[in-house]
Length: 308
Ligand code: GLU
Image 1 (cartoon, helix red, strand yellow):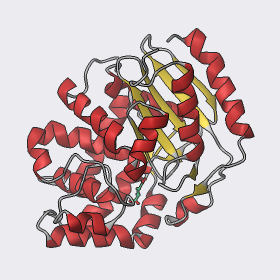
Image 2 (cartoon, helix red, strand yellow):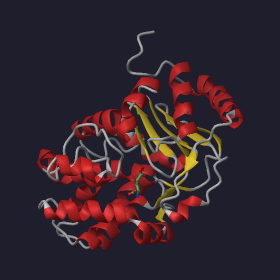
Image 3 (spheres, protein in one colour):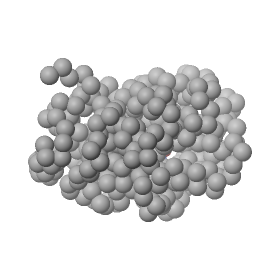
Protein backbone atom coordinates (compact mmCIF):
# COMPACT_ATOMS: atom_id res chain seq x y z
CA UNK A 1 0.00 0.00 0.00
CA UNK A 2 1.66 3.21 -1.13
CA UNK A 3 0.51 6.77 -1.68
CA UNK A 4 0.18 6.28 -5.45
CA UNK A 5 -2.32 3.47 -5.08
CA UNK A 6 -4.23 5.09 -2.20
CA UNK A 7 -4.61 8.66 -3.55
CA UNK A 8 -7.18 7.96 -6.30
CA UNK A 9 -9.14 5.65 -4.00
CA UNK A 10 -9.64 8.41 -1.44
CA UNK A 11 -11.08 10.72 -4.08
CA UNK A 12 -13.34 7.93 -5.39
CA UNK A 13 -14.57 7.15 -1.89
CA UNK A 14 -15.31 10.81 -1.24
CA UNK A 15 -17.32 11.04 -4.45
CA UNK A 16 -19.22 7.84 -3.61
CA UNK A 17 -20.05 9.11 -0.11
CA UNK A 18 -21.26 12.40 -1.55
CA UNK A 19 -23.75 10.49 -3.69
CA UNK A 20 -25.09 8.31 -0.89
CA UNK A 21 -28.52 9.52 0.13
CA UNK A 22 -28.73 7.79 3.48
CA UNK A 23 -26.61 9.79 5.90
CA UNK A 24 -27.84 8.51 9.24
CA UNK A 25 -28.88 10.63 12.21
CA UNK A 26 -26.69 13.12 14.02
CA UNK A 27 -26.44 12.44 17.79
CA UNK A 28 -28.90 14.82 19.42
CA UNK A 29 -28.70 13.65 23.05
CA UNK A 30 -25.72 16.01 23.43
CA UNK A 31 -27.41 19.32 22.50
CA UNK A 32 -24.17 20.95 21.32
CA UNK A 33 -23.72 18.21 18.68
CA UNK A 34 -27.33 18.25 17.46
CA UNK A 35 -26.92 21.10 14.98
CA UNK A 36 -23.96 19.69 13.04
CA UNK A 37 -24.32 19.54 9.25
CA UNK A 38 -24.70 15.80 8.37
CA UNK A 39 -23.46 16.35 4.81
CA UNK A 40 -19.83 16.61 5.86
CA UNK A 41 -17.39 13.79 5.14
CA UNK A 42 -13.63 13.61 5.60
CA UNK A 43 -10.94 10.94 5.46
CA UNK A 44 -7.23 10.93 6.18
CA UNK A 45 -4.67 8.13 6.18
CA UNK A 46 -1.11 7.95 7.52
CA UNK A 47 1.03 5.36 5.74
CA UNK A 48 4.10 3.40 6.80
CA UNK A 49 6.39 5.54 4.62
CA UNK A 50 5.45 8.63 6.65
CA UNK A 51 3.11 10.10 4.02
CA UNK A 52 -0.34 11.38 4.91
CA UNK A 53 -3.15 11.55 2.35
CA UNK A 54 -6.53 13.20 2.87
CA UNK A 55 -9.76 13.97 1.06
CA UNK A 56 -13.04 15.77 1.75
CA UNK A 57 -13.52 17.70 5.00
CA UNK A 58 -10.33 16.32 6.52
CA UNK A 59 -9.27 19.63 8.09
CA UNK A 60 -12.61 20.40 9.75
CA UNK A 61 -12.62 19.91 13.53
CA UNK A 62 -15.19 17.61 15.16
CA UNK A 63 -15.88 16.21 18.60
CA UNK A 64 -14.04 12.88 18.88
CA UNK A 65 -16.23 11.72 21.81
CA UNK A 66 -15.70 7.99 22.39
CA UNK A 67 -12.61 7.78 20.22
CA UNK A 68 -10.88 9.47 23.18
CA UNK A 69 -11.49 6.27 25.20
CA UNK A 70 -8.65 4.67 23.22
CA UNK A 71 -6.25 7.29 24.57
CA UNK A 72 -7.41 7.06 28.18
CA UNK A 73 -7.11 3.27 27.96
CA UNK A 74 -3.54 3.62 26.64
CA UNK A 75 -2.61 5.83 29.61
CA UNK A 76 -4.37 3.57 32.14
CA UNK A 77 -2.65 0.42 30.79
CA UNK A 78 0.69 2.23 31.02
CA UNK A 79 -0.04 3.08 34.63
CA UNK A 80 -1.65 -0.14 35.90
CA UNK A 81 -0.68 -2.86 33.42
CA UNK A 82 -2.76 -6.02 33.79
CA UNK A 83 -4.15 -4.83 37.18
CA UNK A 84 -6.40 -2.51 35.14
CA UNK A 85 -8.50 -5.52 34.13
CA UNK A 86 -9.56 -6.19 37.72
CA UNK A 87 -12.13 -3.43 37.27
CA UNK A 88 -13.17 -3.72 33.62
CA UNK A 89 -13.87 -6.72 31.37
CA UNK A 90 -12.68 -7.45 27.84
CA UNK A 91 -15.86 -8.75 26.27
CA UNK A 92 -18.13 -7.21 23.63
CA UNK A 93 -21.34 -5.62 24.88
CA UNK A 94 -24.73 -6.79 23.74
CA UNK A 95 -26.84 -3.74 24.58
CA UNK A 96 -26.65 -0.01 23.80
CA UNK A 97 -23.38 1.80 24.67
CA UNK A 98 -24.80 3.56 27.74
CA UNK A 99 -26.82 0.65 29.07
CA UNK A 100 -27.39 0.49 32.82
CA UNK A 101 -28.91 -2.97 32.41
CA UNK A 102 -25.68 -4.39 30.96
CA UNK A 103 -23.74 -3.06 33.94
CA UNK A 104 -26.27 -4.35 36.41
CA UNK A 105 -26.16 -7.89 35.04
CA UNK A 106 -22.38 -7.85 35.52
CA UNK A 107 -22.51 -6.61 39.12
CA UNK A 108 -20.86 -3.29 38.32
CA UNK A 109 -17.92 -4.65 36.26
CA UNK A 110 -18.29 -2.98 32.83
CA UNK A 111 -18.05 -5.38 29.88
CA UNK A 112 -15.17 -3.46 28.28
CA UNK A 113 -13.38 -0.07 28.47
CA UNK A 114 -15.15 1.36 25.41
CA UNK A 115 -18.78 1.32 26.53
CA UNK A 116 -19.56 4.35 28.68
CA UNK A 117 -19.46 2.54 32.04
CA UNK A 118 -16.02 1.09 31.22
CA UNK A 119 -14.68 4.44 30.08
CA UNK A 120 -15.96 6.12 33.25
CA UNK A 121 -14.04 3.53 35.32
CA UNK A 122 -10.95 4.18 33.17
CA UNK A 123 -11.23 7.93 33.82
CA UNK A 124 -11.69 7.20 37.54
CA UNK A 125 -8.46 5.17 37.50
CA UNK A 126 -6.57 8.09 35.96
CA UNK A 127 -7.80 10.40 38.73
CA UNK A 128 -5.90 8.45 41.43
CA UNK A 129 -3.30 10.86 42.84
CA UNK A 130 -4.25 13.67 40.44
CA UNK A 131 -6.80 16.46 40.18
CA UNK A 132 -9.22 16.54 37.22
CA UNK A 133 -7.18 19.40 35.78
CA UNK A 134 -3.94 17.40 36.01
CA UNK A 135 -5.63 14.32 34.56
CA UNK A 136 -7.00 16.28 31.60
CA UNK A 137 -3.57 17.86 31.09
CA UNK A 138 -2.03 14.38 31.01
CA UNK A 139 -4.58 13.20 28.44
CA UNK A 140 -4.15 16.23 26.20
CA UNK A 141 -0.37 15.98 26.48
CA UNK A 142 -0.52 12.32 25.42
CA UNK A 143 -2.74 13.13 22.44
CA UNK A 144 -0.61 16.07 21.31
CA UNK A 145 2.53 13.97 21.48
CA UNK A 146 0.86 11.15 19.55
CA UNK A 147 -0.39 13.60 16.91
CA UNK A 148 2.89 15.58 16.82
CA UNK A 149 0.61 18.60 17.09
CA UNK A 150 0.14 21.04 19.99
CA UNK A 151 -2.91 22.63 18.40
CA UNK A 152 -5.41 20.15 19.91
CA UNK A 153 -7.92 21.22 22.57
CA UNK A 154 -11.02 20.15 24.46
CA UNK A 155 -14.17 22.13 23.69
CA UNK A 156 -15.57 23.37 27.03
CA UNK A 157 -18.99 24.07 25.50
CA UNK A 158 -19.41 20.49 24.33
CA UNK A 159 -18.34 19.25 27.77
CA UNK A 160 -20.79 21.63 29.49
CA UNK A 161 -23.57 20.62 27.12
CA UNK A 162 -23.04 16.94 27.92
CA UNK A 163 -22.75 17.67 31.62
CA UNK A 164 -26.11 19.42 31.57
CA UNK A 165 -27.84 16.56 29.77
CA UNK A 166 -25.82 13.49 30.83
CA UNK A 167 -28.36 11.75 33.02
CA UNK A 168 -27.61 8.33 31.56
CA UNK A 169 -23.92 8.66 32.35
CA UNK A 170 -24.81 9.96 35.81
CA UNK A 171 -26.87 6.86 36.48
CA UNK A 172 -23.97 4.66 35.30
CA UNK A 173 -21.53 6.49 37.59
CA UNK A 174 -23.82 6.17 40.59
CA UNK A 175 -24.40 2.49 39.89
CA UNK A 176 -20.63 1.91 39.62
CA UNK A 177 -20.12 3.77 42.88
CA UNK A 178 -22.82 1.69 44.59
CA UNK A 179 -20.95 -1.45 43.47
CA UNK A 180 -17.63 -0.14 44.83
CA UNK A 181 -16.15 0.27 41.34
CA UNK A 182 -15.77 4.06 41.36
CA UNK A 183 -13.22 5.57 43.74
CA UNK A 184 -13.96 9.25 43.18
CA UNK A 185 -17.00 11.43 43.51
CA UNK A 186 -19.42 10.80 40.63
CA UNK A 187 -19.58 14.42 39.46
CA UNK A 188 -15.82 14.84 39.61
CA UNK A 189 -15.23 11.69 37.53
CA UNK A 190 -17.98 12.55 35.05
CA UNK A 191 -16.71 16.12 34.64
CA UNK A 192 -13.31 14.70 33.67
CA UNK A 193 -14.90 12.10 31.38
CA UNK A 194 -17.10 14.67 29.58
CA UNK A 195 -14.05 16.86 29.00
CA UNK A 196 -11.91 14.18 27.42
CA UNK A 197 -14.85 13.14 25.22
CA UNK A 198 -14.99 16.81 24.13
CA UNK A 199 -11.55 16.64 22.48
CA UNK A 200 -11.85 18.40 19.14
CA UNK A 201 -9.78 17.09 16.23
CA UNK A 202 -9.70 17.02 12.47
CA UNK A 203 -9.41 13.76 10.52
CA UNK A 204 -5.80 14.69 9.78
CA UNK A 205 -5.01 15.14 13.46
CA UNK A 206 -6.86 11.96 14.45
CA UNK A 207 -5.09 9.83 11.83
CA UNK A 208 -1.74 11.14 13.06
CA UNK A 209 -2.74 10.45 16.66
CA UNK A 210 -3.52 6.84 15.75
CA UNK A 211 -0.04 6.17 14.35
CA UNK A 212 1.15 4.81 17.70
CA UNK A 213 -1.45 2.04 17.48
CA UNK A 214 -0.17 1.02 14.04
CA UNK A 215 3.44 1.04 15.29
CA UNK A 216 4.11 3.99 12.97
CA UNK A 217 4.85 6.86 15.35
CA UNK A 218 7.98 8.70 14.21
CA UNK A 219 9.43 8.60 17.76
CA UNK A 220 9.03 4.83 18.10
CA UNK A 221 6.64 3.14 20.52
CA UNK A 222 4.77 5.65 22.73
CA UNK A 223 3.43 2.77 24.84
CA UNK A 224 4.51 -0.85 25.28
CA UNK A 225 3.92 -2.99 22.16
CA UNK A 226 2.00 -5.48 24.32
CA UNK A 227 -0.43 -2.73 25.29
CA UNK A 228 -0.82 -1.73 21.66
CA UNK A 229 -1.77 -5.31 20.82
CA UNK A 230 -4.31 -5.31 23.67
CA UNK A 231 -5.90 -2.03 22.53
CA UNK A 232 -6.12 -3.15 18.91
CA UNK A 233 -7.79 -6.40 20.02
CA UNK A 234 -10.28 -4.42 22.09
CA UNK A 235 -10.94 -2.08 19.14
CA UNK A 236 -11.65 -5.04 16.89
CA UNK A 237 -13.99 -6.80 19.32
CA UNK A 238 -15.59 -3.88 21.21
CA UNK A 239 -14.78 -0.64 19.35
CA UNK A 240 -18.23 -0.26 17.80
CA UNK A 241 -20.36 -1.23 20.80
CA UNK A 242 -23.01 -3.82 19.98
CA UNK A 243 -22.30 -3.12 16.28
CA UNK A 244 -18.73 -4.47 16.59
CA UNK A 245 -19.54 -7.74 14.86
CA UNK A 246 -21.01 -5.84 11.93
CA UNK A 247 -17.90 -3.62 11.72
CA UNK A 248 -15.56 -6.65 11.79
CA UNK A 249 -17.68 -8.29 9.09
CA UNK A 250 -17.78 -5.25 6.81
CA UNK A 251 -14.44 -3.54 7.51
CA UNK A 252 -12.25 -6.19 9.16
CA UNK A 253 -9.70 -4.04 10.99
CA UNK A 254 -9.58 -2.62 14.55
CA UNK A 255 -11.62 0.58 14.85
CA UNK A 256 -13.11 2.89 17.46
CA UNK A 257 -16.10 5.08 16.79
CA UNK A 258 -17.50 8.14 18.55
CA UNK A 259 -20.97 9.69 18.49
CA UNK A 260 -19.46 12.81 16.92
CA UNK A 261 -19.26 10.64 13.76
CA UNK A 262 -15.52 9.96 13.81
CA UNK A 263 -13.85 6.57 13.49
CA UNK A 264 -10.17 5.78 14.06
CA UNK A 265 -9.17 2.56 12.28
CA UNK A 266 -5.83 0.80 12.44
CA UNK A 267 -3.99 -1.49 10.05
CA UNK A 268 -1.14 -2.71 12.28
CA UNK A 269 2.29 -1.85 10.80
CA UNK A 270 0.69 -0.33 7.69
CA UNK A 271 -1.71 2.56 8.31
CA UNK A 272 -3.70 4.74 10.67
CA UNK A 273 -6.98 5.93 9.17
CA UNK A 274 -9.47 8.54 10.41
CA UNK A 275 -12.90 9.10 8.86
CA UNK A 276 -15.63 11.47 9.88
CA UNK A 277 -19.24 11.92 8.90
CA UNK A 278 -21.68 13.04 11.61
CA UNK A 279 -24.74 10.91 10.71
CA UNK A 280 -24.94 7.72 12.81
CA UNK A 281 -26.45 4.27 12.33
CA UNK A 282 -28.69 2.46 14.82
CA UNK A 283 -25.69 1.48 16.98
CA UNK A 284 -24.37 5.05 17.26
CA UNK A 285 -21.55 4.53 14.72
CA UNK A 286 -20.90 6.79 11.72
CA UNK A 287 -22.99 5.49 8.84
CA UNK A 288 -20.97 6.92 5.95
CA UNK A 289 -17.70 6.57 7.90
CA UNK A 290 -18.26 2.82 8.17
CA UNK A 291 -19.28 2.58 4.51
CA UNK A 292 -16.13 4.45 3.46
CA UNK A 293 -13.87 2.20 5.52
CA UNK A 294 -15.62 -0.90 4.15
CA UNK A 295 -14.91 0.33 0.63
CA UNK A 296 -11.28 1.19 1.40
CA UNK A 297 -10.47 -2.12 3.11
CA UNK A 298 -12.21 -4.03 0.32
CA UNK A 299 -10.34 -2.23 -2.47
CA UNK A 300 -6.96 -2.53 -0.74
CA UNK A 301 -7.66 -6.01 0.74
CA UNK A 302 -6.86 -4.74 4.20
CA UNK A 303 -9.30 -6.85 6.20
CA UNK A 304 -7.36 -9.14 8.54
CA UNK A 305 -9.79 -11.85 7.49
CA UNK A 306 -8.99 -11.51 3.80
CA UNK A 307 -7.01 -14.32 2.11
CA UNK A 308 -6.66 -12.77 -1.35
N1 GLU B 1 -19.59 11.34 25.55
C1 GLU B 1 -20.42 10.35 24.93
C2 GLU B 1 -21.34 9.73 25.98
O1 GLU B 1 -20.90 9.57 27.07
C3 GLU B 1 -19.57 9.32 24.28
C4 GLU B 1 -20.36 8.26 23.57
C5 GLU B 1 -19.81 7.94 22.20
O2 GLU B 1 -19.09 8.71 21.58
O3 GLU B 1 -20.12 6.86 21.69
O4 GLU B 1 -22.46 9.44 25.74
